[in-house]
Image 1 (cartoon, each protein chain N blue to C red):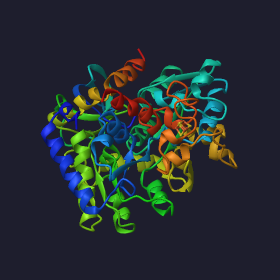
Image 2 (image 1 turned 135 degrees about the vertical axis):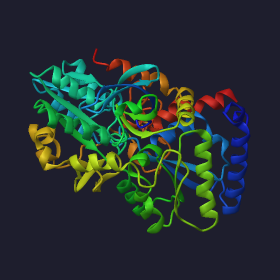
Image 3 (image 1 turned 90 degrees about the vertical axis):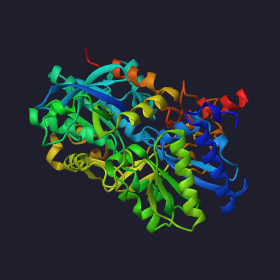
Image 4 (image 1 turned 90 degrees about the horizontal axis):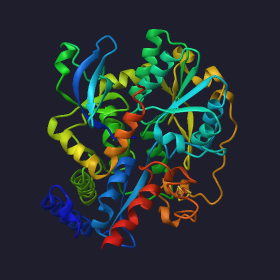
Length: 379
Length: 93
Ligand code: SF4
């Protein structure tokens, strides 16, 4: 408990930890058979490690890191498509900073850039649109990725491009949605998850209703959480309380920001531009029904897959294999902890990542690598 | 990339495109406010308000205390500097 004093409200954190301890005892979680709670969102994973919450909570409780980092679950084949797009003459490829470092089978976008492709990092899809306005002679492709939090912004960029009749702007759409992979994990007979901490910012857009199936069909509690250490601990306590009482419901710890109905205007924007694909591949999880979005027919002119004949539009037959020895898939599923991967910290580091989980600071391998040893060294 | 960053709206840049200027971690840039602006009030009413911005798009309103708590956390987990870097790198100046 040495580090509790660092928190904004140490007394509150101490009280929450005591409550969590009592609940874990009541449920009967032990070191060998811990109560497992999956935090879905990569932002939560990052915060858990940064604040050392996994060290402060009792041994009978285990955090399992979920698939909630869009960079980490992007399959190799999509990165390859993107590299191929970037290498076409006349194309100016734009994307977020995290996305340029994700390895595909033939390297990352950053490597493509070093080899002469015009790849630029933007902060917002609206910046990519601005680049298209300024360089009418070039095909500006925005490599769009992210969950429901980023989707309204890309939808808005497409609608703005349509309004202004900007013809040299397209999206290579890799947007994914949170609920379908959770269903896939819950249906996996090898998974043992006792409850979920739900994402705060995705829920700001989609609300809390989409998680209802987790409680009703799979009888697991879900608590949508904020990002402060006290938020996370309170959410964990709320999940444990439900388990102890034999209940399973969707609760909202982050009600000061997340409304049950989400943001209806953002949802309407997304719905105008995007529709679910039948299937979409996730790194480590395989293809999952209705888990990825594509652009509606009406916006075909702004769809890089249709315009340039890449990706699902080109009828790619099979997923690209992962690198030798890479265990990202098992880590994403929560079946294995990062240090158990033979490449962890040796062949695979944040400076030269082999797997996607080492790329973004929200990836569990990067979080482990950055923080896991830190507190031990300090103790 | 999934963390929303609290920002304060300081001006309206282009009402037609629903663009406001926001102060995000001390950097000023345009953000789209179409999903949070009150349709029945003038856009200038938004000036001074706090929002959560995600990739150049305001997804939610937040009150000032919540914004401050989130900003503190971003500083603590070391994300604030990186975010500011992204912002500066892409101001398209
Ligand atoms: S250490 Fe690297 S290769 Fe291994 S699981 Fe993590 S990211 Fe994947």
